[in-house]
Length: 464
Ligand code: HEC
Ligand code: HEC
Ligand code: HEC
Ligand code: HEC
Ligand code: HEC
Ligand code: HEC
Ligand code: HEC
Ligand code: HEC
Image (tube, rainbow, N blue to C red):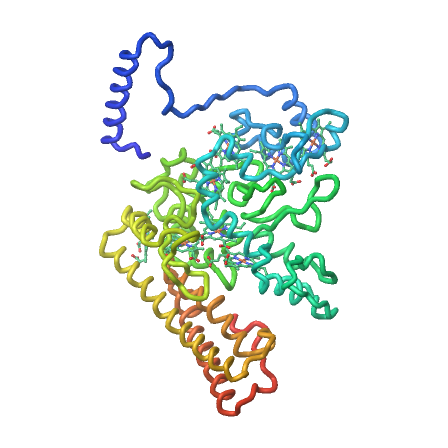
């Protein structure tokens, strides 16, 4: 809700109406408050809540100091409110200071806890790609190829000849030997995974702490602290591009690099320290900043748009998978997303400017899809002729195919979408055509000689 003069007039008018309704229903002691937001704030802490704070201030000062700087501590939300759980909770345990009492806590705190007081943010978050879709990439047994990548290849199961039979329905975890380090230090810290518990209800198997889509033992999903770093939980932090940079970076989705390289990022780098980041929810508008951060385009209220915690709401295309399609189903509503994203731009740009950017994005997608279709056609023929190796990671053609979509192709598409010429071109389209031509060479060799070349590998750092 924006505070335009027209809306203020409308609000005063509706208050006037409420007044009439209140008079009309005189006799009832209270006016109808059903539509009002209930925000009861009790200052001061209960004895129990104070005990957590006092002891932790000595034993864990870093945590308490961070919490003290946040607005929730000022509103009286304490350790007790977020960490206390019922004794019957699958996550219930007791810390050193609570042994012998009837109070149970958990170090794990999911979006469910926040939903008690922030139901709308959590509802939006849960329908976004940041929730169950994010962790499904890492722990869904149906996605066997990814499990194999994490355990057998990166976890070096292949060196011990561990035969990971992923078709049995057993999780690879139950089939040692393997090393969990790659997924625990990598994939999981961004995506999250299913948390597993030991007999004391504490997390085991390096499944916690985790990334944005973490799945908790009580069935709840999502870690809000990936953007609202604990224990300050600041709205200002989340509005800065750094909040997203922990995960949206690197060769396969260099969104922070793309941003810093765009005109918007230049403005942020040059003037960001003069911008105002702590405006109240839904009142953060151009003027507080002169160019958008990630949050402005993807999440924050701007102009007539309200804040959303669903990051797919304003997206048209799926720019991460092998073929880019207009979003639908669990990935959002692309037609609607297109309209919403245009509304973001027109707060600062004219229609001509915005239309051109959107056409360029559509063309970038079309160009990428064309190359991808060409690669798929070559691969199909090689497969029919038995000219693909079973292990794609030992087969130059298939390695290059992976880089075509997962690295160069994503960089081209996302660079074009977010206005970063160097990523769109040199790290993107330029490398895409090179990769494509190399694939063509391998394809032609195999078709001509009816055999796979002897040493077939392109790995190492190529093509970045
Ligand atoms: C607004 C809710 C909230 C409040 C208030 C809060 N926490 Fe947390 N705390 C969290 C969340 C969320 C996490 C991250 C949990 C996860 O990833 O599953 C966390 C994690 C933790 C952890 C485990 C992670 C670690 O670094 O070891 C500890 C310990 C902790 N909090 C202590 C405290 C203490 C002490 C206080 C009071 C000073 C407090 N918390 C107040 C929400 C809260
Ligand atoms: C008398 C001191 C004391 C009191 C009171 C106390 N704690 Fe703790 N707490 C500790 C210490 C010491 C640790 C670190 C050792 C451990 O994990 O048991 C800890 C650990 C924790 C952890 C992390 C547990 C884990 O498994 O990593 C959380 C969460 C926590 N306390 C929350 C609370 C809450 C909530 C309260 C109040 C209901 C509270 N504590 C009361 C001393 C205390
Ligand atoms: C017991 C109720 C309660 C719970 C539980 C709770 N919050 Fe809050 N939260 C509040 C209140 C009240 C405010 C408003 C404080 C203010 O504006 O002064 C707030 C404000 C916030 C803000 C805005 C902070 C800012 O800088 O203005 C964020 C972000 C937030 N909460 C995140 C969370 C997250 C994440 C969780 C779960 C880990 C959580 N909250 C759990 C009551 C709660
Ligand atoms: C802890 C890591 C992490 C952080 C921090 C993070 N993201 Fe993400 N984000 C992900 C992952 C993982 C995915 C892919 C989800 C999937 O598997 O579909 C993703 C997907 C997305 C998508 C595509 C959504 C979809 O449904 O396809 C957008 C847009 C996005 N993030 C924007 C942001 C913005 C903006 C921020 C910062 C305000 C941010 N993210 C912070 C991990 C993160
Ligand atoms: C640095 C953080 C990070 C790490 C580490 C990471 N990812 Fe991702 N992943 C992301 C982000 C961010 C996206 C969204 C990319 C986009 O929009 O282009 C993503 C997208 C994906 C997708 C496509 C979305 C989907 O749900 O289909 C899959 C699959 C995936 N990652 C699997 C993995 C696996 C498996 C690992 C470990 C082997 C891993 N990722 C490591 C951040 C990460
Ligand atoms: C991808 C990053 C990201 C994640 C994950 C995230 N938030 Fe936010 N959150 C933001 C941003 C950005 C804002 C500021 C929006 C604006 O400009 O008003 C915000 C604002 C808020 C606010 C202030 C009120 C409002 O709606 O603007 C609350 C409360 C809040 N978040 C709670 C949560 C809770 C609860 C979760 C977990 C379900 C969560 N956030 C997860 C980025 C995130
Ligand atoms: C000027 C507005 C703007 C800014 C700033 C911006 N983005 Fe984007 N972003 C877009 C647009 C436009 C798209 C493509 C949307 C579409 O498909 O219609 C996009 C696409 C994405 C995607 C691709 C989702 C997919 O389909 O794979 C991710 C992830 C993403 N942005 C994350 C970020 C992150 C992280 C930042 C900051 C580092 C950021 N964006 C900054 C406008 C922006
Ligand atoms: C908060 C204001 C704001 C928003 C919102 C915004 N931009 Fe910008 N944009 C700017 C500013 C300021 C510049 C720098 C203009 C200059 O070159 O002096 C800029 C520059 C650009 C440029 C570089 C070309 C040029 O005009 O110099 C492109 C491309 C661009 N924006 C696209 C977009 C798109 C697409 C969106 C919506 C997804 C968007 N912008 C949203 C403020 C904004």
